[in-house]
Length: 309
Image 1 (cartoon, rainbow, N blue to C red):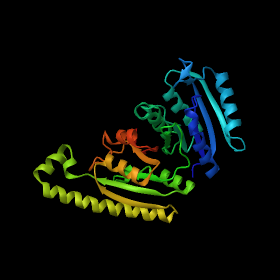
Image 2: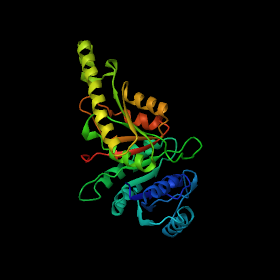
Image 3: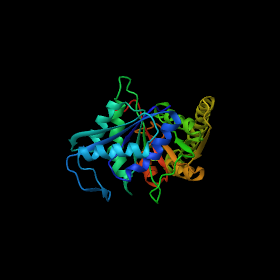
Image 4: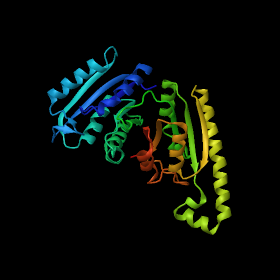
């Protein structure tokens, strides 16, 4: 179970939307919470159109008041201000966060282009990389990226977890954290694998499909059978742990399959392994993850692999 949650806050009401999520997870598992704020070198009076913390004293007063207001009666809540002014907030936050050794980092997605700013630039991704090195065991720390809805509200508790997999064991780092959340929140999860259609193959696979269409279709059919077998093994293991879980294999473009399944199952939490490149099907292609991040109406559990640099 998650026993220590790290909650970075920038002082805005937008960032505070993750508080019910962090509080709920802490109550479900008796976890500790550390609130963290990083002072910036060039401080604007506003951030995301809201008042922005400008110095150490105001940041400390803000976090102290927040603990009293939002976490009253919840033991094990602490706060910290990183007062060495940072030019690169994302990098400083990630490096400083390693000191706290959290099991999970909880962040709020900001703005309509958050998936570009946060995943590609840098905050969530750098946190994933920096926190991976937090201990001698190099245990990766996942990031829960909470996405508010169109009204700016966060739907919590979560109701359903979707875990896309590509059939390669080394790429399934999100299974463990997803199972922990499913058990803590007592919600179901679905393991999903997409086998691409022959016409959607790219690169060398596309050329092979054009030259040997029947052979390619047979390879994809066998891949579909192997994926079903692979998911069955995981489903059985997770059920033995007490997780309510099922599996599904679909012939579809991976991103489209994930999005369609998320809509059908009303999945409000999608688990994504980062930099998981399949040597066979390229499940996590350069376009797959950003497409899902941009289009899915869900929050995301981002799980780094142990082999990432």
